[in-house]
Image (cartoon, rainbow, N blue to C red; front, side, top):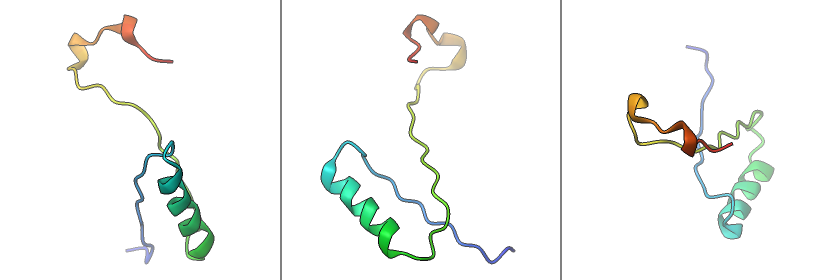
Length: 57
């Protein structure tokens, strides 16, 4: 055990009210010392059935 805790916050960053809640949490919680922004997309298709022509990015 490391004695560290992990808090996850999930939100839609294009929603101003939800973004404001995250910003408030980051400002007001002095125990937060690392932020990982793990934004992305996912595919619900088995890898072998993936269509690379529909690749984003």
